[in-house]
Length: 178
Image (tube, rainbow, N blue to C red; front, side):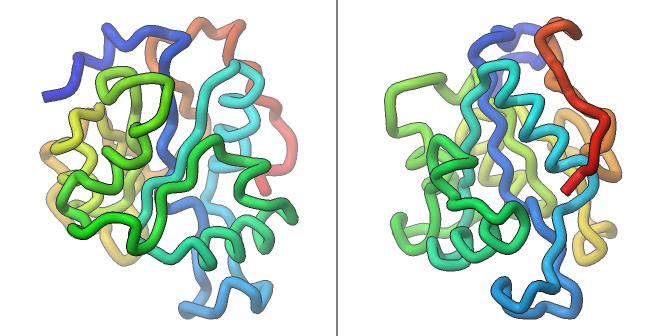
């Protein structure tokens, strides 16, 4: 079980953004028809300003992560995230916790100091099994799933900030959320 969200050290939080984009009709990430989910850009900017580490823990291919970052931000994945754990780098896919463990298999915060942001029950189960606190923001495709194992469930990331982080440390701008 993860550490209680109220005991997560304010400077050790890592946000694991797994589903940061919304495909329209499942287009190619390179088609230009992919947008960020609400609140994602603000959370990432604010996390960077607060000195938090960011990681992606996904079973999609590294190529897709790169394409999504280019389409959504016009930047390389490595310019946005400290760690990209993607693709077939692990033998067992979600709901196994392997991809989350790989993301933290580097110097930095441990599982109890991370918040996983997921959009599916399978992802929630993987993050929970890895020992993370879990915030779920369901997508249109997962809205009917059972998220009773999550620490928090929100419709999206609009207005969200990590628990235990002082408001002055969380410098979320109010600009364009793309």
